[in-house]
Each structure stands twice: as structure tokens, then as C-alpha cells.
Amino acid sequence: MSRFVRSERRKLADLFSTLGPDAPTMCEGWATRDLAAHLVIRERRPDASLGMFVPPLRAHARNTLRAFAGRPYPDLIELVRNPPLWSPVSNPLVEGLTNGLEFFVHHEDVRRAQADWHPRDLPKEDQAGLWRTASTIGRLRLRRFPAALLVQAPGFGEFTSGAGGERLRLVGSPGELAYFLAGRQRATRVQIDGPPALADRLRTTPLKI
Image (spheres, rainbow, N blue to C red):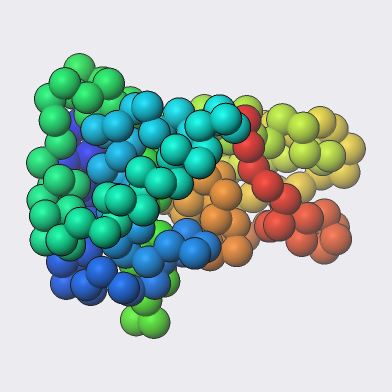
């Protein structure tokens, strides 16, 4: 997915530039400058990135984010656009695995927060890559959900997950499913078939590994 990552990175940087630093995103509490700062920190400041997972480092992560978000916005965009080759997540050897979902999801976080957004018609190759990722994380993130889940991407495949119980079917394109499984359920265009209360629960439950 390296080509896809580079394309998503470029398009997101262009969108950041077009919208300016204070446009809304789907990340609660973050404007475009904050999301751009997050991406830069993830690639260039692993010490601060650990704050997402290590509670004692959360204050350090917040302070680092605030500092980067306060930089001149054009400079911040250039840092997003041109990642360091030494980065553990953006070097050419691993970026297809580590950045494919990250940049797709955050690109959509910006697009879908705008009033005029519309679904993208992605090339089949890119959809196939997103489906591989979605099917992997989906099995993990849905494994404890209290239902017998069937997840289908017509033309690409299907998988089952869940802890068992009533049947529930989740259907969508690979991109919509990837965005759904990244925890953005309410902002996706998918179909959920099954008991209404269980379907509502799937749309609101935190999806974490």
C-alpha cells in the first residue's frame, strides 16, 4: 500500500492547505491544525506518541501536540507532506503497513467534517488493500461484541467475528468498513442487518483492540 499511502498523504496535505488551520475534523476537539500536529508527532516524536498508550506520558503528549499545533501552519503542512526516512512508522520498508489506515482514516476525518463531503470512488487496488486491513482489525476489534457478526464487502470478501449470540450482518465498501472499524461508526455509510437494538449498539460501542 505504499503508493496508496503516498497518495493519501499528498491529498491530505493539500486539503489541510485548502481548508486552513481552523477547519473542523471528525476528531473531537481537534481542528485541522491539531490533526496535522498529531500526524507530525506520530512520525517525528515517538516519545510523545507513546502518550497515547502510556498514561504517565499523556501530559507530555498533550504539551507536545500543543507546541506543534502552534507552529506556523504552512510549516506544519510541509512536515506532514515530507516525512523523515528514519521514522519507525514512515520509512519505505514499513509505511505500507503502518500508515495505510492511518492516512486514509485521517483524510476522511477532514473530508467528512465538511458540509459538502461525498464518498470517494477508490480504485479497486486501493479498496483491496483497505479490505485486507479492515478484515484484520475487524476480527480483533469485534471479537468481544455480543453477537454472531458477519462482515461483508461485496466483491472483496467477508469474515466472521463476535462473541456469539444473535446474528448481525455489517455490509459496506472496503473504505466504509475500514472507517467504521476505526471507530467512526456514525460517520459511515454501511448497512447493518439484525435486531435494531444490537445494530444501534454496534454503531456506538468503542471499537478497540
